[in-house]
Amino acid sequence: MEPDKDSARGLAQMEGYLLWNAEVEEARRGASRFTQQLPWLTTAQLEDVERVYVADRVALSRQSLLRIADRAGELRGEYTARYERLRARCVAASVVAVGAASGTCTALTLIGR
Image 1 (cartoon, one colour):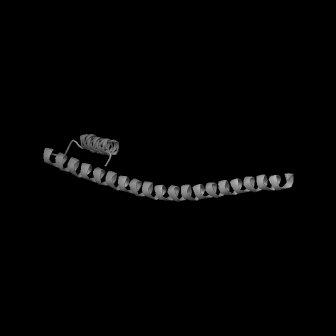
Image 2 (cartoon, rainbow, N blue to C red):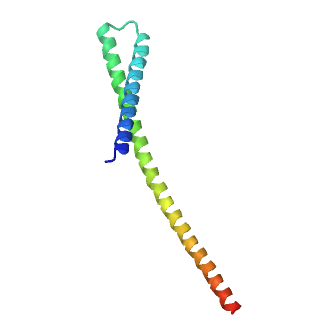
Image 3 (cartoon, rainbow, N blue to C red):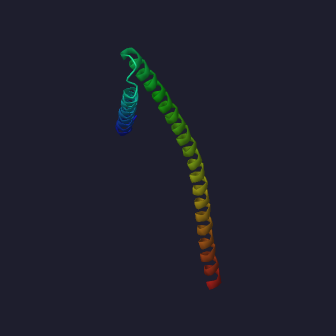
């Protein structure tokens, strides 16, 4: 691969890693806030509730990200197809315009003789 593409891919991976870690940390903070509302639980119970809360939140986040990634792929395909059709129409219109201009020039040359 080209160095620029490798660098861009590496930066995107690092960004994804940092964003995912921020999501996990936010899940931990949410779990802590949740368990603070349950003062009657023992330390072990609090830890279990926090662990389950974090695991559930991380699983939901992963599902959301997968749905978003799938939809982004679908949209990329749809827009690529639209772009290809538009490009084909533009090329066809250009060919017709050049042909019409060429035909007009030829007709004017023949009439002028």
